[in-house]
Image (cartoon, rainbow, N blue to C red; front, side, top):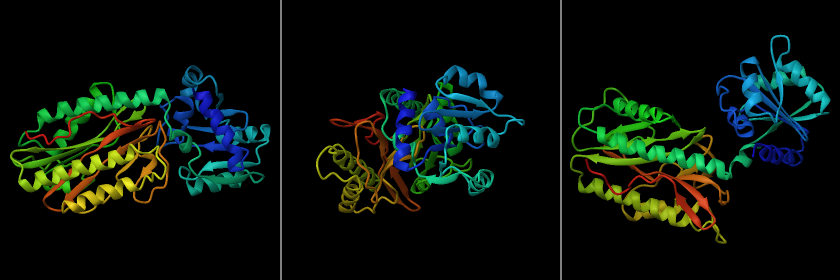
Length: 366
């Protein structure tokens, strides 16, 4: 499995007109090796892929892990006596790498400048999304992990709605939800969004310890679980108390907008399909119901990261092909009143789409 991913990347070097690629993204290292332990913030590991070899550079803390879980890579242990700059130069000379690509979205200007200063005989070429373009289509193993993450999200939703009682704070609900996901063996895909009442009109509201749930409040829950390194993403909006007719109309319009977009996404195999039209159709439906356009992209890819390729927006021109996993998440937001968002994680299939998050979408009133 990992060897086939590496081969696809090696084959792509010719298209990028480079002899090798320096990989610094921890997500991309995990994709190529299966090792998810490297820090996202620190340079604990790097990979150099050449046309026929793959080298993983890391320190002694990870030596045994790499040997056990990624025996198909050539491990190069770095240390104070053998820093990355020295060890990498030996590989560049050995594999006759003259044009070295680097991940332009993951490496800082200073890091790139330092490399160019150290390796004056190497041409450094910024490369965009070389590994990400391979990650965009999930294999069966990845899809199974995403399914498990979605199932855990559904269980999290079942758990948390039982705790939505007047007096609870946004932060309490957020903590309970995230602790449940962790207690069930998962991780969180991202910092959960829990928004009560008028806060739900802020699409990326930061939950607080001061905002308490009141009778006749809506509750927006946007969260995801991560299982074996793979994410899910789901949003549900429920109501505590007695919803107004305006809120019910707003909720129904959002639900219908998602259905309109989903119906169109399911036609991705037909000639003339344009991914951006999913949002156009959802916005058109909302307009007929008297609500504004969705102020954010209606979807995005999901995998090792909760936001990755492909993009599903009014500006997207990607194709959808079987094996991609995306979200479908229309939202309606009325400042200082309410917000409604309904989001699912969706698998693109040969025959249409499969919704992987199964929590109910009819309005739940508590």
